Image 1 (tube, rainbow, N blue to C red):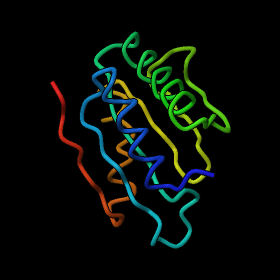
Image 2: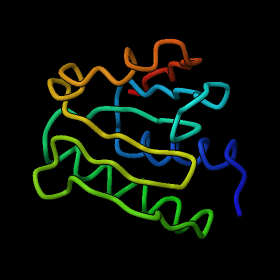
Image 3: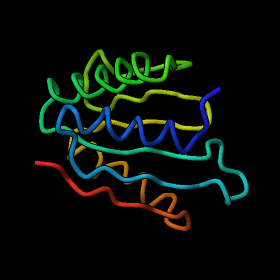
Image 4: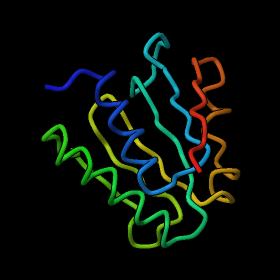
Length: 119
């Protein structure tokens, strides 16, 4: 079993490989009632890029950490893809879909780490 810190680092690398933007890591490990310990949230500029980012993160973790997700969803319309790695949930959004659901604001009492965009 890969430790969460190493898994999150690899997730971020896999997201950045396909130019995901506005990546944040939401640490909910100290919050009571949170179903997951971490959310990793990012966005792509089009449904094609959202789909590519979702596929990329799964491939990156499979190749580099020999880790497969427990489940994933959203590839049919690629407006919001979610990939489940147990205690870590990866969300890949279109910007307008991310703005609508505002996951970071739902968990505003969690520690939020903004990852710098790579151009």
